[in-house]
Image 1 (cartoon, helix red, strand yellow):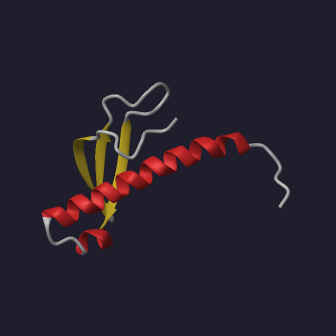
Image 2 (cartoon, rainbow, N blue to C red):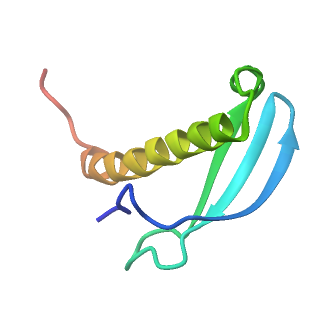
Length: 87
């Protein structure tokens, strides 16, 4: 089961990259079989919309929540790898 959206995430570091800033977070107790390292990228375009610390925090939290949902969906998609789907 993927991490819940209310998981505790500890901000570890950031790296300035072409096109944005990558942030590294660690979940200290992710649960069995779950990753504890999570990375998000704040693009240059996103960063231009941030004017306050609260806006930055909101942007980061939204990106982390999306990442957690994506990890949960990706886990379910793994079961389809190699299968034919009739649509």
